[in-house]
Image (cartoon, rainbow, N blue to C red):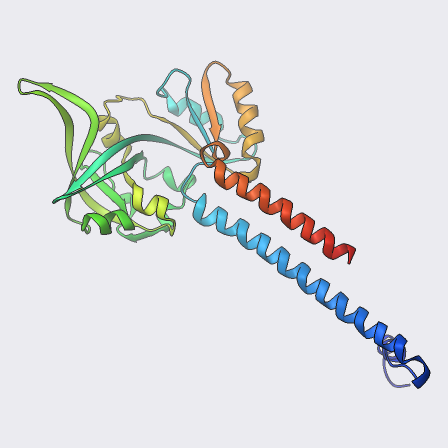
Length: 283
């Protein structure tokens, strides 16, 4: 009679007399079943949350949630568009970029690479590259100095470290008396980043946007404007709204198109997890 009422009632109906042992067995089985169901619920929810966190941090930490480019090619007057994006609902940051495919040569090794030109002061608004540096810093990229930051796997393949020189070969050509030659430019490795995803660590290099514009002969234009949203899973809806607003002026795309395989994996994962949770709740 000194026990709490809830504990007393629970123990009273858990234990049975000799004539009702079967009821006691059913009670024990029910308790174990509920405990197992709750454990499964917690496990499934933890897996779902962990998968989403991994997706946000590693897979999509380097890509833009939404990209706005020129309707007829390169984007001109990106500063004006950047001002329009400031204070816009669901948009946390924006940054310009120049992008192109190149070949990087060091000693006798050559690798095809995606070269991205960025503004060091803008880039942390839309990506986590500044937090993924193994050596050097993104602010080491200065206009006119032709510095380059390589992915860890790419640097390892080329056998270079900060301070070494690499040759960047652009697909654009120069007409010379000796014939048509590709554009070459020597760059100094100023840093190495490691995202933890092979796609970026092996196939990406970053330079200053002014150097990229000179390399690709883009003048004052850029490839586009990258946007970071408060929720990456709302990117398709926000992109459609922007596309309707800027119809005929800008082209708008989002990460679900550039990384459609990841998007399909997420949809499949959520569908399967929903069925599992529904079965657990039913039990």
